[in-house]
Length: 149
Ligand code: RB5
Image (spheres, helix red, strand yellow):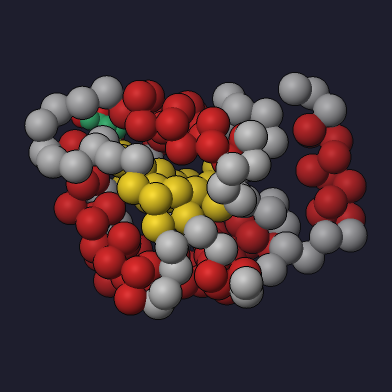
């Protein structure tokens, strides 16, 4: 299985369900298996319930990669980064998405459904999936902050 075909677990709250569905379709069109942790409609929900589901699956290694979406992406980032081994990156542009992989080995991509349009979001997802971690001095830095948790 190539890096690009690594199964993805995806989750969102009501503020980003539309973008979540578009990203899910974008992934499936590319043959990437997607586990959808919800939410599935626009009824108001609490983003931690969905952030915790996705982050825990990545933290335990059941999924290597996850994508989380809420209105701003901020709440989901805060929830996900409480989990040991999770490196969640809120990305608003391609540069951030690429660098979150190259330097930070981000294993959860976070998007804001009320911030980022669907075309840019799909480009961000593609760049994030395709960019490898550079390792080396960046691995040393990840090791430094992994020791804190
Ligand atoms: C929901 O209204 C909103 O607070 C949520 O989607 C997210 O933006 C929180 O950080």
